[in-house]
Length: 79
Image (cartoon, rainbow, N blue to C red; front, top):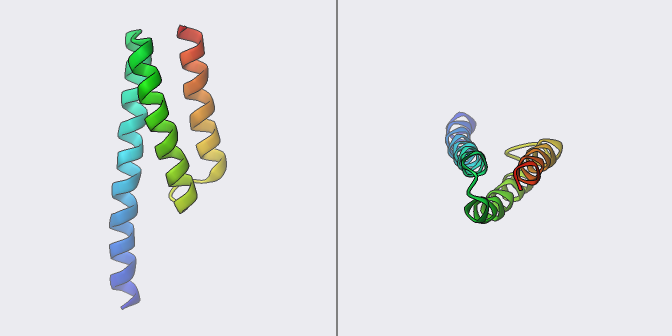
């Protein structure tokens, strides 16, 4: 039973982590494209997703802070 639970949890966590990485890529792409209004909208969604993943323990709290800081810094440099 424990093995079945681990498999299920691993698959769930993998899907969530994949969603997070996709969101990070799309927000970086929006920033690099120079689309500031689109980037800000993507940034809000990405920050929300980062916080959710951190709260669930999918990523570490420090990793969440690092992601948010780096994306915000990128946006500020472009703006």
